Length: 65
Figure 1 (cartoon, rainbow, N blue to C red):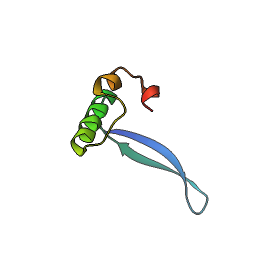
Figure 2 (cartoon, one colour):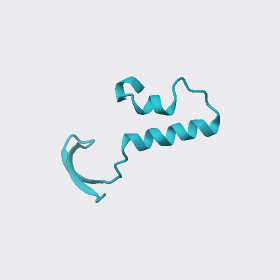
Figure 3 (tube, rainbow, N blue to C red):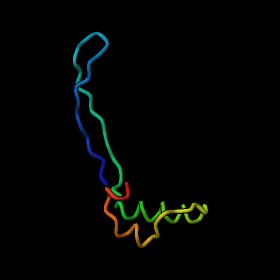
Figure 4 (cartoon, rainbow, N blue to C red):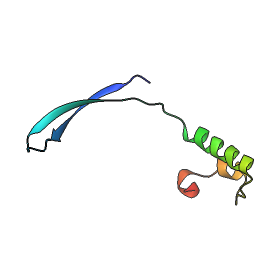
Protein backbone atom coordinates (compact mmCIF):
# COMPACT_ATOMS: atom_id res chain seq x y z
CA UNK A 1 0.00 0.00 0.00
CA UNK A 2 1.25 3.45 -0.85
CA UNK A 3 1.76 5.69 2.21
CA UNK A 4 -0.78 8.49 2.48
CA UNK A 5 -0.10 11.92 3.89
CA UNK A 6 -2.58 13.70 6.10
CA UNK A 7 -2.67 17.05 7.84
CA UNK A 8 -4.10 17.73 11.27
CA UNK A 9 -4.32 20.68 13.62
CA UNK A 10 -2.49 20.33 16.91
CA UNK A 11 -2.77 22.58 19.94
CA UNK A 12 0.68 23.61 21.18
CA UNK A 13 1.54 24.04 24.85
CA UNK A 14 1.30 27.81 24.38
CA UNK A 15 -2.28 27.45 23.08
CA UNK A 16 -1.55 28.12 19.39
CA UNK A 17 -2.83 25.88 16.60
CA UNK A 18 -0.21 24.27 14.40
CA UNK A 19 -0.65 22.26 11.19
CA UNK A 20 1.20 18.95 11.31
CA UNK A 21 1.69 16.51 8.45
CA UNK A 22 1.88 12.80 9.16
CA UNK A 23 2.11 9.69 7.03
CA UNK A 24 0.07 6.53 7.41
CA UNK A 25 0.87 3.28 5.67
CA UNK A 26 -0.11 -0.32 6.16
CA UNK A 27 -1.53 -3.41 4.56
CA UNK A 28 -5.11 -4.48 4.42
CA UNK A 29 -5.41 -8.10 5.45
CA UNK A 30 -8.77 -9.79 4.92
CA UNK A 31 -10.53 -10.89 8.11
CA UNK A 32 -10.77 -14.43 6.76
CA UNK A 33 -6.97 -14.58 6.51
CA UNK A 34 -6.53 -13.29 10.08
CA UNK A 35 -9.07 -15.82 11.36
CA UNK A 36 -7.37 -18.67 9.50
CA UNK A 37 -3.97 -17.77 10.97
CA UNK A 38 -5.35 -17.53 14.50
CA UNK A 39 -7.23 -20.81 14.22
CA UNK A 40 -4.12 -22.56 12.92
CA UNK A 41 -2.03 -21.02 15.70
CA UNK A 42 -4.49 -22.20 18.35
CA UNK A 43 -4.40 -25.71 16.93
CA UNK A 44 -0.61 -25.79 17.14
CA UNK A 45 -0.74 -24.63 20.78
CA UNK A 46 -3.28 -27.31 21.66
CA UNK A 47 -5.98 -24.84 22.66
CA UNK A 48 -9.39 -26.44 23.01
CA UNK A 49 -12.04 -24.66 20.97
CA UNK A 50 -15.79 -24.77 21.18
CA UNK A 51 -16.35 -24.82 17.40
CA UNK A 52 -14.62 -26.47 14.45
CA UNK A 53 -12.90 -24.58 11.62
CA UNK A 54 -15.90 -25.27 9.38
CA UNK A 55 -18.31 -23.82 11.96
CA UNK A 56 -16.16 -20.70 12.34
CA UNK A 57 -16.08 -20.29 8.55
CA UNK A 58 -19.88 -20.10 8.47
CA UNK A 59 -20.21 -17.55 11.31
CA UNK A 60 -20.52 -13.83 10.73
CA UNK A 61 -18.28 -11.34 12.57
CA UNK A 62 -20.86 -10.67 15.27
CA UNK A 63 -21.26 -14.37 16.10
CA UNK A 64 -17.49 -14.81 16.37
CA UNK A 65 -17.16 -11.82 18.66
